[in-house]
Image (tube, rainbow, N blue to C red; front, side, top):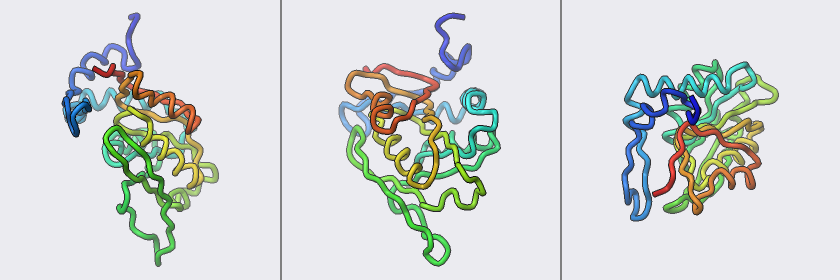
Amino acid sequence: MPGLGVLGVHEAYVRSLVRRAPDWPKKGTAFLDMNPLLADARALKQCIDSLAERYGGGFITHVAGIDARGFTVGCALAYALNCGFIMVRKKGKIPPGPEGSSSILSEDYELEYGKDTLEVASDSFDTARVTSPRVVLVDDLLATGGTATAACNLLRLAGATIVEVAVVMEIMSESLQGRRRLKEEAYIDAHALLTFCEE
């Protein structure tokens, strides 16, 4: 059927489970809530199956998820691909390694409604016994691209090659340009299961 997105005949159903929350968390911001999608077994399975089909074949060694909603989809995808999972955390969430051996890499970034910091342990890939980790980075949403760009930078500092950024939802607008920012600043492509135009 022409005009179908990456989810094919399942797209309309999955899309119907995404709720818009206008003016949240601040006025002028349209928040896309995927909690109903995650709670629906059929929709969640279609999302994970679609991503697993794209990234299967053994060329991915790890899936990385961005705190916190990226953990939900990312960990399920890692299981489906038989890969390890790496958590890219918000500031202050990573404990030190054995006898304080693990150093923490951090990067500040801007988002639509403020600033934040992401962190990853520098030894994230040390226990994986993989000489050249190849990672797909997963999050719930791509908007400005600031969060994903910071996460890509951190994972590269930890020794990984980023294959692609995968998101459940992407907001497309003249003002956001998250996909372009990722390409220009992190030199990486993005893959979205669902796209939404900013209202």
